[in-house]
Image (tube, rainbow, N blue to C red; front, side, top):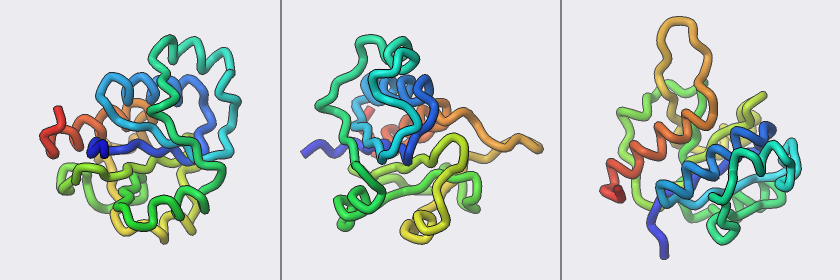
Length: 152
């Protein structure tokens, strides 16, 4: 069993961001999980252009719905990254095998998903900045999780 963290994307809608996250996961040894529906097809030319040869379908799980995702995760810890959280990721103790969930670029995750998850974290921002690009956020959080769990 792979104890590396898993990055889950809730209904991603920008192919280039998802492709950049595929590359980050491939380079850092994390599994990627995609919760459909996506806002694009996985054979989209914009996705392919960024993902290049980094895609390994054995390291990507696709869930047909959020219900199927949460059913599969019922005995696992899910950590939600959200701008609506009050706890900084720097104050959190990541565990091996966490699933770190990121919301849709355009809308985050719906309220019912927020309510299903106990651990909600944010990346603190300077001033009036709203959010980082999701690919940058994944890189920051995945690197911190791997550092804390001595997996890198």
